Structure formats: structure tokens, C-alpha cells
Length: 181
Image (cartoon, rainbow, N blue to C red; front, top):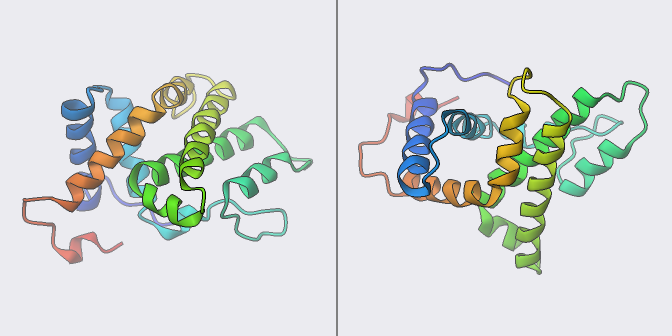
């Protein structure tokens, strides 16, 4: 996956929107959190990021249940670092979809409310587990994942506001050529 440089217009757009929204509308002034969320939006601007997890046979894993089953597989190189990355990805994945595109979750299941509730509970759980599998010396630190778990619903709400900000941006949009990845 290609990294987007720190001065790229897409990264600046997401950083500004997330920081402004979380500070002024959500009431969360935590630069570590807002930087992480802006990076999450940038990361998920790549289609490959949605399918970052692969099963034992190398096949892309696209559902929460399948991601959790990958964690349950007994593998010789099974490590807490791997588990931390997996739980982090599940937390990121559920936060992204629940925050930015909850209507897609409703379309994906006839029991739409249950799907959204499941995404929220699994996201909170995954971030909590990621926080337990690391330390504050890790990058990102365990305390950030604990914070994401504790404030998951607020982050979902905030990302929904970020989406509205993107949809109703009154400023001149960046040139399309600047946003192409």
C-alpha cells in the first residue's frame, strides 16, 4: 500500500476537518486521538486497506466474523504483536464504517440496527484488547486504544460529523489532481 506524504492535500483536509470537528462539535481536545483518526481516514482512502487481513490460504478476509476467526487459528508464529495488529484493524474497520457509512451497514443486513450495534460493541472490544496487548511505549500507545474503546460512540458520532463536513464543504475543493492517490 502506498503511503500518503504528510503534506498531501488529502491528509491536510482530513486533519483539519477531524481536529476542528472533534474540538468544536464533539468537545474532545486530544491531539493524539485526532491525529490517529485523520490517519485512519487517509489509510482507508486506499481500497486495499479494507482487505488488509488475509486468511491462512492468503485469501482476503472481508467480514468481522472472518477477521475474528483468523485470530482463533492456531499458528506457530502466533504472537501478541500480531493479535494487537489484528484487533487494531478490527477496531479501525468498525469505527470507519460505523462512523462514516452507517447506512452501508444497514444495507448489508436486514437487521440493520443489530448490525450497527454489533459493529460498535466489536469495535470497543477490539480496541480494548489491542490496548491490553501493548504498552504505552508502543506506537501508537496502548492508552490511545483504551481511549478509543472508552469513547468509541463519541468517535463514531464525530466521524459522522466529519462526513457531513466533507459533504457540505463550502470552501473551494482541492484540485482533483491533488487528491489522486
